[in-house]
Image 1: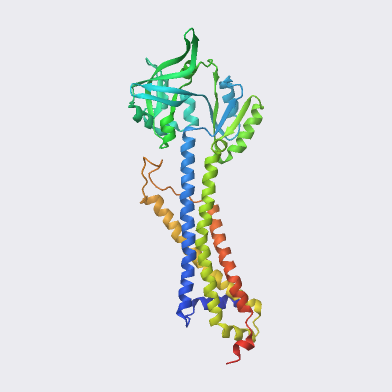
Image 2: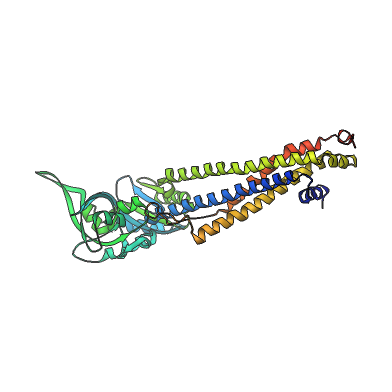
Length: 409
């Protein structure tokens, strides 16, 4: 065992004559532990919130969307096969997108209507997992009226139930002598979904592609674009570049989920950083307590320091003793903080004792997700702050004059 480490460990364990210093050291440990635990729990909750929000968004939206500057894409079956040949692509499906008016005797509501291939959509979208009534495949049923799937909030607002009918007024009308006549078609509600996101549950509706082509005036072999699901959502930017190269550019354009929700996730990331900086101040307060404890220890042990220096201990070794002592306090506080933080995250995730109103938020509990990179950053940041807190006391200890300290002995 090195001399510096041996002495630092003795000072950490020794029963000091001044109990006040021991109290300050204990508060230093608790301050660092509290800051580390708070950082772990808050960042875990914010990561869980972002991940949950991302999953909700990607549940009804594809990872990558391909469109055309001409307004429509033809021969989409051939294009779908070409996309699925790209490594990392799990599936591709066509879609038609338009804004329409949905009405029934209870009222009228503007919605985003999307035409989908029920078979292909199950490989690209998670819509079937969000269904409360019915199934996406029910859109293929051959009945008197074509089928439609709507959100639960929209169904509640207009008093719509499964098997009831609604009218869709599409913008693709016809001009006549009396002016522009919008096209109105009746649909039967085959399913109701609930994502927990109010904007989606009140504004989205799904129908089969042939019905969308007929209602919106699309040609039988044309759609608005293609939706693509990939294996790793974090590689969306790289895969979108590969897809763009494969398609050869104009008239196609490719956008991934990060680009389409850039502002939202940038705001969440900024909020995460801001919360991290604010909570790091707690660790900083704990590190200031380390300065106080070490300075008072230097004052108490000045005679011991003078004796060690008179026996041949160098000033560098004295400085290292107090640096090691401060790092021991910081390491103890960081360890306790990790134990408390990880324990708190485990309780939040498994026992869910903090409940959220499901009608306000799109989740009923605080989600927790811990990233190894965040834990490493917290540990390194805590130890750096604790190290910086030891510099002044260590320099003060190494500057003790042995003759001055022992002249009254």
